[in-house]
Length: 176
View 1: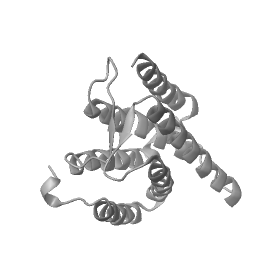
View 2: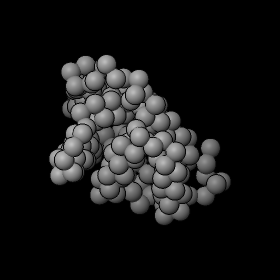
View 3: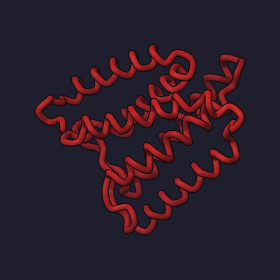
């Protein structure tokens, strides 16, 4: 349990330090709508999947519920990720852009694998680490799309949400 707390503490600190070190503060206003988009989507997914979770977070001695972890994700980790991701996105070179996407997918899937190994996350209802890695691909793609074409990103998000709700056997009676 102490290892999980230390991992989460280091992770939150890394996000905060990363924002200050790598964030493009001069252009924060251009990234802010996408930061809010990711927060709203994450909080909405928490609400929709309240009774039919795909993943859950194990407690440590400070963070005792999945809700606290989701709030940390929604208000710290995800906005920080979007800010850094968009701030440093390569402006040219298709190969460099693909490598950048791959780097972020690798970072997120590695963080999740460590969290899983430490007992910080568990999968339910057919979800898995592999599906999460695929989900990371969709996440970073949609974040990039939202930055320049928000309506398209919302459309894709609703479409993917419908697919996830269908594939993972959600029923409206399970929704809060």
